[in-house]
Length: 562
Figure (cartoon, rainbow, N blue to C red):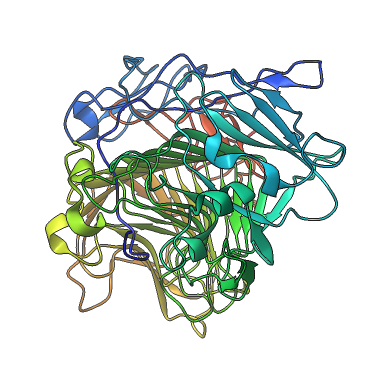
């Protein structure tokens, strides 16, 4: 089999998406609608200016924008070309803003599971026989479903395999729990799991079976509208041989050894070791194209451990959009999200900091399919609300955003972290933390380019921009609290101000990070045509909505003044 744990990244992009928005039908069922466009390799090199970025579909450009720093536009920005190979893909607003869902029908077989349905328990679903276009509708019930199962299906771009939760009238999602779960009957019959290397790793386990060719992998999967919990080392399950098993520390609600085109959407994922874990282990087993949209992911992790996170993803091409990503359980020391992918895009999320709010580092083992992606060196973080509040019950951060690498310098991501139109709120006292560093980079070659952000220090802790090394460039216009410092006295970090760095007594934000009338950053964000456009913003409890510009130009930060 394969060695336990130790994640890695993934291969060069190819066909992108799985399922998109669902057309609302008046009948009891909806049909899965697949977007016509795909996404793959960016046509260009690793710098943002050298490629073609997909325009935000339907996003109205502001009539004008303030002139300013290098690369900005003083009028309506030019519309970037939209080839099928562009990255990142267009934003997708939630199919149902209320969170309520109806059954789906696909192009293949449709299975209904739950009270009064043809199948009453998840143990009886033929998980290992699912084919392209199949849909499994899991209907809500009062008690959690307690079944752990495996997926090895290979859907297609226009006929994905969909695992779909059907909510009750109050929009409650069906709950799948790993605590005291039994193994699905088809896995038992096939002897699918290995007792040591696969069985204790996940509630939903994604991998090929022994009879599939080496190098094959599940493809075009969509997991949506479920609450996934209980895959944790403190919990037990019934193994396929009937014995009692215990999850390993790195177990996850969704654990993918290798997968291609996986979408996780509108799920609640909580109280697991890792929330979601996607690996790239080798040249033959490298994942690609992982999309997390509109989920609520929080309170995962293990007390005292640095190694588990809400999200731990290693893939070629990763997109995080419209998610609420919270802290870990109290006492856990991992990150809110950790990513070892190529071309990482983190946009329009609400992220509450754990030990790190965002941890973007190198692919483990130097898996070539990830390293060969021309966008491997860079990442794009934009339109996010990032909150670091030491009053929260879990561990908060003194080194908020980690960029570049943490283990093997040969594979460090040596490009640029493009960090723009984010709102960062920090709250702590000096008794809780003497300082907080916004950006932590390991070498002098690493760089952050910051545009259009708002950095607010709401406590008495010193806000430092850099920490160990690297360069932070403040371009165009940013706002930062007055008490900021470049870095610690022994730091090799360098700060360059090439645009306008504003610093009034108050940013004028509401407690939720939204600008109030008269906010300091009103109309001051420049449009940068070399970067993916900012046309949406996060909406509670999870999701995105259009970001309409009402003034002379877009506002600084993650939100537009209404």
